[in-house]
Image 1 (spheres, rainbow over the protein chains, first blue to last red):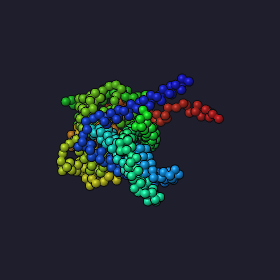
Image 2: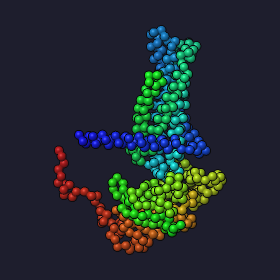
Image 3: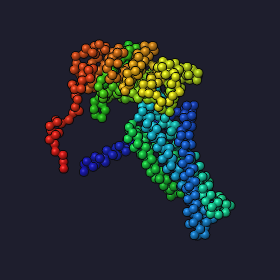
Image 4: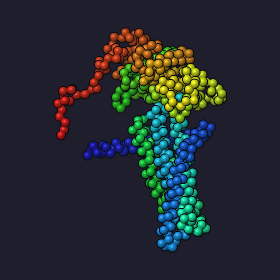
Length: 260
Length: 268
């Protein structure tokens, strides 16, 4: 019994220590005097690496998701004679939930894992140590641009996801199933509120972007510098990010709908 | 300014409860090539990291250029590190940058020099290590010896006062080893540096070292010039120098007796 309590205590201490280290890392990234001349090009590079290079997977996925939602929605709505409501159905599903959540899950798998693996490998090959010995702080040079790059990329990718998914739904609903284009767009326009639906979705994606980037850089920076350590850190990034996204989605949705 | 660039006093350091240093005292005089030798796992690399301020001792002090490195603020520590260069065992080159950009990295980070001046300085450093022609190669295209020479060029880019070499010769073919050994001595003498070489390649290191420290079991077991060390009567030092498989550093990892182990029946 005592052993189990000790084990629980040790586990709890390790969890608290991990949160402390993650908090310290974040503190060092955020609360420092910004150096725009050196920092801006590095952040731009990361927006390219994390955002632009994720575009293909985001566009292809969102196109198919929009098409599937339209196909499923049309047949269900048609049973109630409400197929004209396809536009609002797709737009609300995508802007409020699918856009931010699916983009975040894809982003964690594509960019988050890459960031963790890159930082972990830099650590294993002593690149971070040599940077420190050259009097260059790796937190400022390596960690900070990757965190800001992820934070900025996520809402932009979500906007692109939303637009492409709605276009996919348009292709299926209007071009294939024969719904009137005017009905599709006008019903969508009248049902979707810019602040309540679109902006809330973007706020969600900003929060998700921040959390994914934080988890990714933390897991990479504190990864055990071995091949097995980097592999497990990369896996943890994807698993923790996915769980955080889904959990935070519920909390944010409850707050936005007014349940809290 | 004292004669010693580095002074280590009563150094104690532990890792996972295992003592690595147990009261080590040593000094590194200015302008000399100092070798720190000893069997694998005795904490030679750890010692370099303690001198560089990347690790903190449990007790004792490490003074670099008359400053206790572990009591410096982060900004003062980084200022001091600009006067140090370190060549890591793996080279530590940035894999996404070319050879030229790797050497230019510290110059771009710490100086406001023009692009033309940076180019000239980088080419000078690369010329010194014989790799001016490799400036456009990526680190993945370099051999192990070339990578270490590039790392050396990068380490001396800011003209440091102290340069630390972590196992610069391990895994090198005889030609690369000869080139590196010659470079270490030449760079030290030409630029007026102080060099610390951590190595267990006995003959090569002794051939260029002005003074040698031998570490084992957390303590200094020998010190002196290369000829002093060769004549040291300590079993520990002689086992290391002659590469004897058994002696004060045992061949067998600590275990229960061989008979006891054989007689233990496996649980069915």
